[in-house]
Length: 413
View 1 (cartoon, one colour):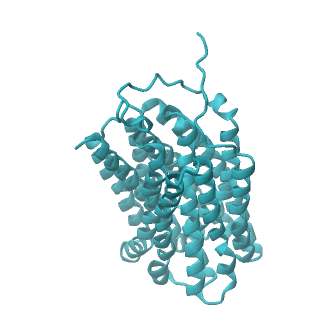
View 2 (cartoon, helix red, strand yellow; view 1 turned 135 degrees about the vertical axis):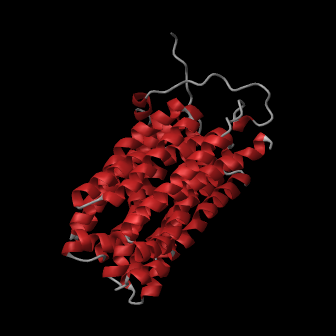
View 3 (cartoon, helix red, strand yellow; view 1 turned 120 degrees about the vertical axis):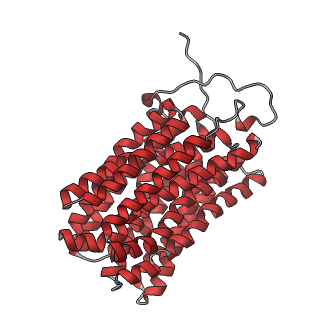
């Protein structure tokens, strides 16, 4: 197979890894009603378990990105998947809130590497005009994994118990790992943005973490993600709980209906890439194409507000579906932004650092969610998550600056 076609195989691997990542992540969310009953967890206690995952995820985002840039896509991705798959299986041995927290922490350490690794693969294989689409393709794995988790995990839980559910999803990661090591190909020596050029790209300049943190893009992108990604964390970690306690769904109902918003959301990954690609083909700049696309989909995310106000559960699920589609449309464009600015050898590090903002926001708003739900209701939570994406948009337009390759000057030895 030609290398130009092999890139789709590589993004396919990233897609499958992301599916597995979300199967592992969502198993707790679907099993939460059973786990909370067995371990006697309040909303605040449950939020602390989620906090453990996000704490490790936040810490390791900065570390994993730099590690993957140093080790390369093949080895770095393999280590991450092996780690998180083993951690997922360990959940089956949880005996209470403390051990569950610890295993979630281990899972967060491994799962933090998926997006930096996948974005690095895209940056190595795809030119700028196709990156948002490629990012949307692999990132749709998050929605697909979240679609599969409710019916599969609910069925396994009802048939064999929640412990077996964690073991089975962990095994899938090791199947992926064997295929990745067997079929991985190195990217072409010529930059994907220089299609048709015969000369290899110049020796890349390696940027330190300190240098990256001094750039306007990294700082503003981190802050923007504080207000964007916690919305998605809420849906993946709390939506089954919302259906049970606010809409009176049982486990069978959750298995039947909780996948629907994630199914709708999967379309946003492709629509986001297609919209920015359409704008680029009409000679809009990368800056306008990416930011305008994020703006459009962020407005859709405000559907969270009517979702909590309507009386009919099916209408509420429909509004949540629109909001989640909005998030994935935003994500496919924001995922492409680091590669628009930084060279391939820094992309994983940049996204890892930026995702620390994501994790920090996730930790903060997860604890707030648990407290607010215990003391009030889900209504203030949905209102907040309907407004936060608009704050992200404001940061992107006002503070982030233009999306163009960073001018790097190699310092003299």
